[in-house]
Image (cartoon, rainbow, N blue to C red; front, top):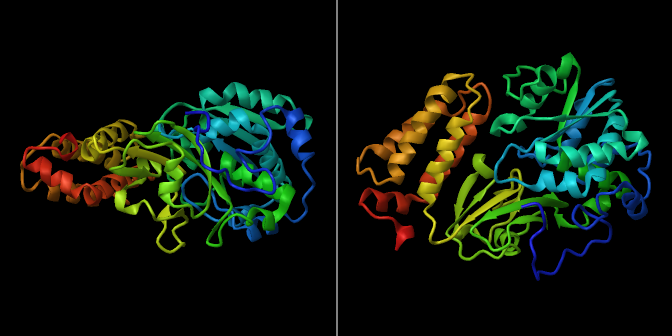
Length: 396
């Protein structure tokens, strides 16, 4: 999961280093390959011209978040990666940590931030601390290890971790860029987003946009898991068809793909030719956090969704009714579908429960759980009907 999959696919033709084609983890090699980080005076404008969007899942324009920061604030690099299917953040922190640090330092200079925090999962701690310790300009970066739970990667959970030591999401009525950590303006960016900023700071917006689609420029990392021969991390241009992205991992067969992880959406094999990109690209499948799980023809999508729903119900922050009561009830209903309950009203019960949890939680955890279940009801409708009649299409 932490190395790029072996593939014979021709690599992307790049005229400057990107995330998977640059230097190794050491700072000396990083400097030999890329040189020192320039003092980029117009970074926010350059990021805006690049079209870079956040790689943590929401896809928000990065320049807008940078512009919202007022001086003397806080920059937080979010590498907590609570999503079980994701490995890209850990890969970056182990193999290209200095691109992440470059992005942090360039962002701090551009926004006049005075505090820098790098939040990582336990598996990335040693690599992150070593990288920070290798360079004099990174001495002000504080490395913090988060808890291993699903909701720990949410932006407000990262801020709460640094405030109280507990990575629980909180309900913010004011944007973090206005008032976040210790009431200071706070910018929380995924480590991949910051690595791209490290590239843009050196090579500029035009170089970043030289690959990808005009509606989704540049590249993005994808973690690929599931019924594939070579799970791991790969890099693809914005707008690359789903079939091409998962093809590097050599799927055994494809009955469906979960796009975006446990808070993502299921798509069927009919979607394989659609591009993975921002939602603004016509016909695109939203790439989200860059997480892809392939299920083959012998894997039941309904049962897989039931297992995920049960996991998500247990990973609740326990702070609101939709999480404490709604998600376990939803998970139980989906489990009944998966195990062949022939109650004709069961599908309607699932749909009713979705309306009770979606958009009603203290954080986005209920929304994401509702999203994956709702997409499963659509994508695996034929499978659900087969289950109601006592058999499973995947078991044929």
